[in-house]
Length: 280
Image (cartoon, rainbow, N blue to C red; front, side, top):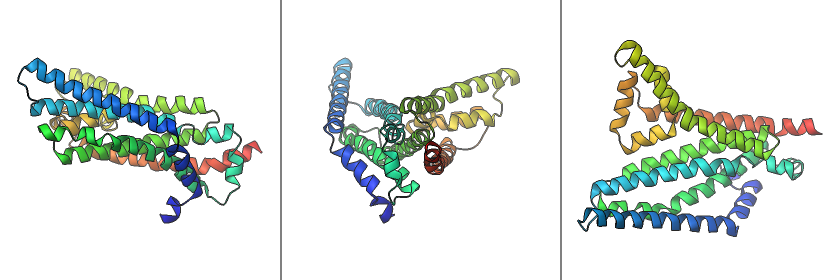
């Protein structure tokens, strides 16, 4: 592990990313937007209710909105940070030089992926003080916040792995980015639509809720659905009852996305030098 964290690719990528004024300007504007949203929401809510104080249920609603904003940010930014990690090196004709170093393929892929995930983690952690405001008004427990941040980490790791894989096997950065965004849209929108269609068709055919492991699977791999179950635990029991599959959503999500991450990194490592041999 020490050798992986000290590899030159990771050190170079982190220095380039974290010394860039553009990166910290983006974080600054993101935090400003979050502050405007939070304080604006509190002021509007207290003025509309006329009570003069922020109630726990309103604090919980604000926490749910912040969580979905963070999830949308992760789903939108991660492909842009990782889909060009290898293909951009190929387009700049610097990948050949990188492959002649003593770094293994895994160290190169690990360094590229870790530097992108580190920036995203900084972005998420930077918003923690704003998140902490919900504890002043109640409605949310620290454990719930911790679970949601673990969910964020697993999601960005899986999408980052997919982006690195596409960046390795596809030559053009724009094509790799489109493929990564397309995969992300499938996991977030298409799977939810398939779940609703299958559940509705089974219910109409059987006249009541029918067992549907396929619908449960598509619900389990949808990050929006899992976010709903983490924020409102009662929705998890509704999904298991609607599909007649007694398996918590978070278990299926964790297993699936860990496998996706491992598979994506494995393919990226295997294809990195194979693609370069074809170009020689």
